[in-house]
Image (cartoon, rainbow, N blue to C red; front, top):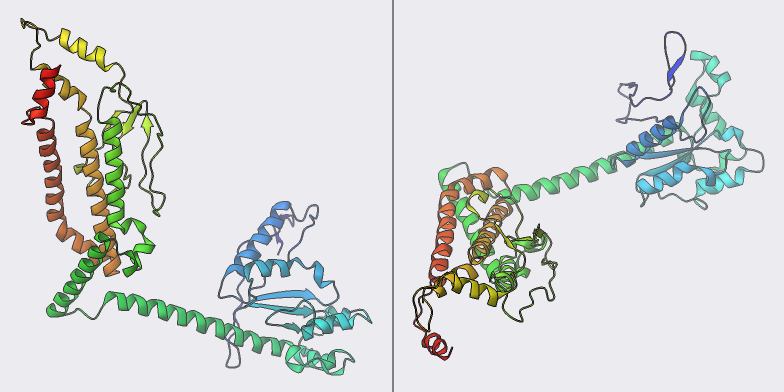
Length: 453
């Protein structure tokens, strides 16, 4: 495979390009043969390099890896089979030996007395291959010099017929004609299996697409079936009946009830640890602090972590097309110490002309600052729930329709209504925050305890 320049100097020993020779005729088989370079380890000064060794090996492995190819492990009959690296390479690419066929060459060069080792190979008693071993005899240099007067097939048949040892081998194990027929049989079986697998795959895809929907009533029936399938699956997701559909195994974030419950727990924990800006006496927010994640799920709900002392309020870090509606703000990672000193400073900064009491407006001032993290935590929680619900909707539409165009069309129709509901969820969160952060209360325990102070 040496490619020489005009000056005769060797520029490149091996190339990834290939020379294609096509032979056609009524008696020719439907067969393609790729003759790749032999594996070698030694560098020949001025001829081959380490790069050539690596390129040849990569080329051979690339062709061997093709699941529709038959690996012909060609080995000279006069060498020790245990030293042939090509057999180890074939084992890696075809561990079950479904498409590896051994071919022995140069039977005329086998030393006298060593024929039994070769016979053992052909008979499958040593170095057995599932598809077996074949033997061929190619023309020698003297044969090739005879040109058109030399009948290659006749000479090969005469050799195996008249040889004292090789004539004992089964006729369908020797000769190029026998090898060609065997290759056609194997290749046909491989192609047939590939076609069957493709047909099954396409039939499954067609079945998932549903019946024909060329007419309006067929389209309506199809959409009703999709809606019913979506409804049934979503009911299962909300009731945590995950064994009812395989889709909950392929994408665990579709287990909607579970991801919502986990997010609720995280919100409760964050409100307890970070909901107040000033640390109460005896409060230890660092105790048992762990980076939260839902390890039981495939794609975990993942905390974005602290950054320069500021903690994230979002856990669902997946991007989606409603991110512009959502909130993602950071709050101090830990409440500050010194609540008594802080209260004293607020009192001193708000004193009026009261005698023996304090201005009632101090409580709203302190409460507003103490609950200042609530907005970010609550809106982060609502944003995560919206993100989870929206990603569920997008993924489930693709799952039930098995058609990206149909799923995209349905989502575009639904998007305005979905966006409206997402906005209402955000507005409701703002409303609840306004109510909960308002200091007005009718709870008589508050007044009773205040009098005790």
